[in-house]
Image (cartoon, rainbow, N blue to C red):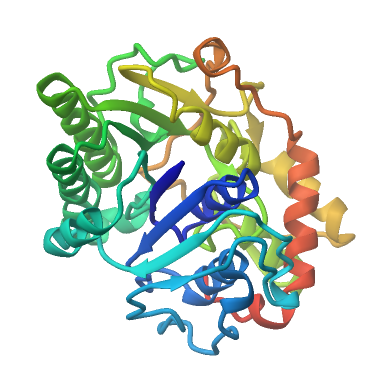
Length: 360
């Protein structure tokens, strides 16, 4: 099959692309390569996908070495540069530097490639930054999804998997089930993802576009985003710097390893009509205090804690009911949190020469 994956240089999307390629599928990946965080992370992820055609990692945190790329394609069965650590992948990957807010560019892409499904994982992420720059969250998360849906309608693509967020469950009773009313978002980020869900429902009812909405729960793993706690905690503890902890550390999350989320996202590409499905750990939530202890153990170093006030837009606790994912997708997480934290630490240490320079 040929998949379009939006946000392909992102944390979850790039791993999803890898699994699709390993299964022999063709993937066209698009990303606008913005510098919300250090673009070297995005370039590292893309290099794993592009195989022998990967470019050397750059030195700028703001300018991607893939910026402006019209089309760059890997050869099936090629191997990435040794520094990327990629395995041989039988599928073909094509990267285009493209913003989903740019409808004419998207239209040209859809006219050139016939897609079997769209995995729409592009988004402006981050609860706190959405309070500083809400307009770009609306234009990307909601407006960009509308552009994708319009191209799907025009070119007859019938399947979308849409990435959404557990942040929508603010104020709901746990464990969170997909049928809960999620009408009290605490951030522009959550509100714009809700808008994307609703727009997708409209296009399902009007035009028969089959959409599975995947609500992700605190995804973590190697090459994760530096604005999330795991990357930050590892960097601070490894460097012996004070670890900034919002609140007292008793807040907890349903941590989910990136490989599990990527598997669930691909499984969600089957025909389902319109469904919302949680992809989460499904275990009792893990406190940040416990996470810090796991990372201390993996690094063999103790954290120096610098307590900060709890952020108003944060949720105190998340916990996914994942019975629907198991029933409809045959999916459940396989990687235990402690194993995932160890893998995250191992990746950081293996790439410390450049990722230790990433600003938080």
